[in-house]
Image (cartoon, rainbow, N blue to C red):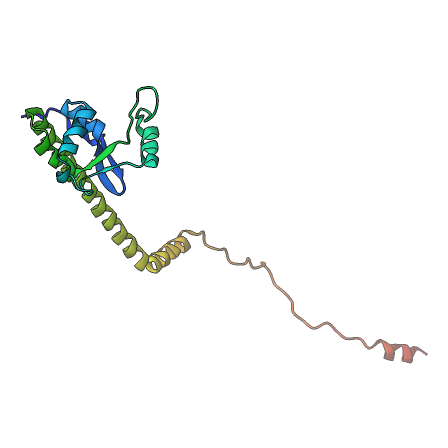
Amino acid sequence: MDAIVPVEVIEGKIYLIRGQKVMLDNDLADLYGVKTFNLNKAVKRNISRFPQDFMFQLTKEEADSLRFQIGMSKIEGRGGRRYLPYAFTEQGVAMLSSVLKSERAVQVNIAIMRAFVKLREILSTHKELAHKLAELEQKIEKHDEEIKAVFDAIRKLMAPPQEPKKRKIGFIVRERSAIYKTRRLKAVKK
C-alpha cells in the first residue's frame, strides 16, 4: 500500500534543532489533516505522554531562525501564530499516534517513521564513508615519504640529460715560456 504522504515530503519537514531531528507542530498538523490548534490541544490533554525528550517548545530565537529559513508566519500581529511552536522528536511523533486516533493519523505516522528510519540510514552511510576516508588519509600519511621518494625519482628520470662540457678540438701546447734575463743583456752591452 502506498503511503498517504511521500517520504520526500516528510523528509523536507524534519529539522535539526538542539541537536535532535524534530518536526514542528504546524507541519504535523498539515500532514495529519487537522488544525495546529487542535493538535496542540490533544497533546495538552495528554501531556503526561510527552516528556521533554519527546516534545519541547521552541525559544523565540529558535523560532526567529526558523522563520527566516522556512518562511513561518510571524508570531505577533497580522493573524500569525500567537505562541511559539512545539517541536516533536521521533518518539514524540510516535506518541502522537496514540493521541490522534484517526485512520489517516495512523497511515501518516507510519510514513513519518519510515522517513526517520531512512534519514538514519543515510546518516550512517555518510558516517561510514567519512570514517573510510579518514582511514585512507592516515594510510597516505604513513606512506607519504615513500611516495615522495618515488615521485622525486620519476622527476629525475623525466628531466632532460645534462650535456657534458664540450672539449675543444685540436692540440693545446703546454710549454713553459722562456725566461729571458734582461738584466744580463743590458750589462753585456755596456
